[in-house]
Length: 360
Image (cartoon, rainbow, N blue to C red; front, side):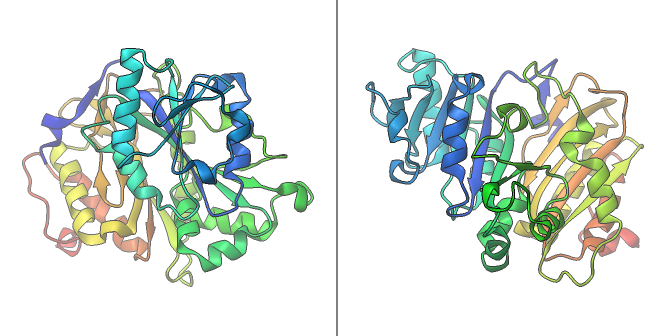
C-alpha cells in the first residue's frame, strides 16, 4: 500500500462523528451502564446502535416516533438496530441525519452483544469506505462484572478479547464487592490490558466524561494528552518485563523512538506484522513522526489490519517522539519487539520477507 498517497490529512482537527463501542461479556452490566449514561445531559445528542432490542432493556426510555428501525428516546437520543451490517446502519443513520429525517446527533454509541468479538466492529469504523469519511473511532469501553469477571476471563476467550481491546475498563456491580474492584480481578485486567484505566461503576453510574472523548481526538479536534491516550508509561514498563509463564495470554509491547520514520518503514512494518502475526495482533495505536513530511501521523490497527494513517498539521504537545502500543495474543513478545526495526527502513527500501531477516 502506498501509505503516503492514501493517508488522510487532518488540518487542525477531525470533524467526523465520534463512535464509542460499548462491549462486555454476558451479564456484565452494559445495559445498566448505558441506561445511566442516557440520563446525562452530556449524551443527549447521541445516537445509540444496538444489536437487538430484546437484549438491551430500553423500553422505559422509548417514546412515540419510531421510523423504521430508528426510535426516539425520551433522553433526546436515537436508538436503532443493526441492519445487515454495522457499516450499513451507520451510513443509513448518517444520511437520515443529513436529510433531516432524524434529529441531529453529535456522537454514536454502539452496544454489542455479550459474546461479540469487538474486532469486526472496530474495522467497520476504522477501514470501511462507506463509513470512514463520516465516522471516526473514539474508543472502546468494556464492562466487567466485579464478582464473576475473573472466572469469565478464565473460561471465555470472548471476555478476554473484549478486555484486551478496550480503551476504558469499567468494573460493574461493585456494591457486591464492598464498592471496590477485587485485587485479583484488577491484577488480571492490568495483565490483559495495561494501557486501559480501570474505572468503577457505582450503582451503574460512571461520569460520561470518563468514557467519551478517550480516543486521539478531543471535542475540539485536538489530542489533549498523547501519553494518556497511549498508556505509554504503563505499557512501556510492562513490556520490559514479560512474564514467560503466561503462555497463551495477552501482552502489550511498545515502541518509542526519536528518529523520523519513512513511509517505506511504516508500510514495511505493517506488512511484516500482518504476515507474521495476523489476527493475533489484536490492536495497535500510536503517533509516528514521518521523515518525508516532518509531521506526525496517527496509526490505528485491529488484528493486523491498519486504518489509513491520519496526517496531523503539527504535534499535539511538546513530546515529539514516535510512540506505538501493540496488544497481542499468543505471540513471542520479543519477536514483536524485533519487528520495530522495520520502522527504520530507509525511503525506497522494500520490506524484509521475515522478522528474522531484519537481523541479517
